[in-house]
Length: 505
Image 1 (cartoon, rainbow, N blue to C red):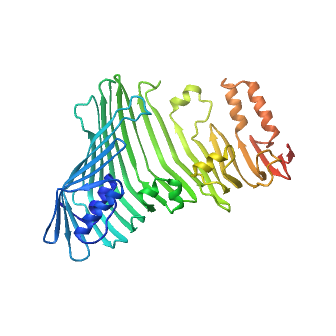
Image 2 (tube, rainbow, N blue to C red):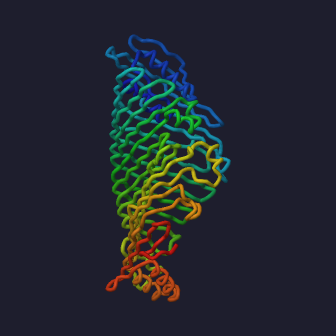
Image 3 (spheres, one colour):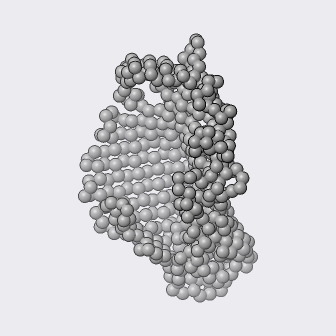
C-alpha cells in the first residue's frame, strides 16, 4: 500500500481515466467530488462500499467506467483509503498497481483494421502528492520514484500480438485547479528524469515481428488552460468565444532509440539518437500556435531493401513554428511561419548513386524559411458556416509580410535573402486579386554557375538547359565580375514590379 495526499490518486486517474482533481476537504467530500467530476466527464465511478473507520473513509471495490459510441473503458481499484490528517489535508492510500481495460470497434475508414481490446496495468509505488487550498483553488505537489504503464492485448491467444510499456523515473511536479464545474483554470508543470519505452509485436499470418526500445532523459513541461464544461467544449468555436484557452511547452534531453523489424525473413534495423528537443503550443479565441525543434539527430538504417549495407542520415538542428490568428478582429494581428533544417547530411553511399566520381562537394545541406507579418481577420476560422460562405475568398486581409531569412545551401551553392512588404487592400486591381504590395526582397546566389557546370559535366542536365537557366537568371540579377556570385533586388513600388531597378510590370 502507498500514501498519496489528496490529489495524488486523482493525478493518476486524470491521466489514464480522464477524471479531474478534487478539493482539499473532508474525506466524504473528496469521495463525492470524485463521483461528481467523473459524471461531468461522461464517466461513472462506483464502489462496493464506503464506510468510516475513525478518521479514514474506506472505499472498496472502486470501478471507473466509460462507454460511448462502442468505445468502453473500465478501471478497477481494490481499495482507496481517504484519511483526514486534521491539518487541512487528506491522505489517500491505494494499492501500488491496478488494471484498466480499453475496448473499441475497428476503424471503418482503415482497411484491415481490427477491434481494440487492451489490458492496461498502472504501477506507481510510493507516489506522494501534497494538496492545499480550497474547492475554488486547489494546489498540490507530487513526487515519486517511478511509474510504469504496461499495455498488452486482452486476448493472449490472438494471432497478432503486441505489447508496449512506458517506465518513468524520478517524477515531480505541481498542479493547480481553480474554478467550478462551468469553468476551471488549470496550471501544471512536471519533470521526469528518464523515460524508457519498450515494445514488441508479431503477426504470424503476415510473417512479421518487431521490437522497439527508446530512452529519453530530462523531460519537462508546463501547461496553462481555461477549461469549460463538457457541454461547452463540444463546440470548439463556441468554447473559444466562451473563454477556452490552452498553452504549454515541453522539452527533453538526450534520446536514443532502436527498432528491429523482420518481414518475410528480411530484417530491418533502425538506430539513432539526438541531443534534445522541444515543443510549444497555444490556442485561444484570437490565435493558434504550434512549434518544435530538435538538435543533433543521427539515424542509421540497415535493410535488405536498400542497395548498400547502411544508410546514415543526420542534422545539426531542425525547427518549425507556425503562428496564425484564428478569430475575427478589427485590427492587424501577428502571424509567423518558420521551417529550418540545418546541417543535413547523408552517407557517401547515397551521394555515390548520382556522383560516383565525387565531383560535387558533399557539404551538409541547409534550408531556412523564416517569415512573419500582420493580417486582419474578417472571418472566424472555426465558424464553419462563415467559412463556407466565403467560397474562394480569403478569411482575412494581408497587411504586411517580413521575410526575415531565406537560406538554401547544397553541393557548394548557397542562396540567401531577406526583405519586407506592406499591402494596400483597397487596391486589388493593379495586380488582379492581390492587394497592392510595396517593398523589396534582396537575394544572393553564390556558387550557382559552378554547380550548373558540374551538373552538365556529370550528364545530369544538358548544356542547353543550363544555358537557358543562366539566361533567365541574368534577366533578374547582377553578376559579380571576379567571382561566382549573383545578386538581385525584386521590388514593388509605384504600382509596378522592378528587378534591379528595371521595370518588368
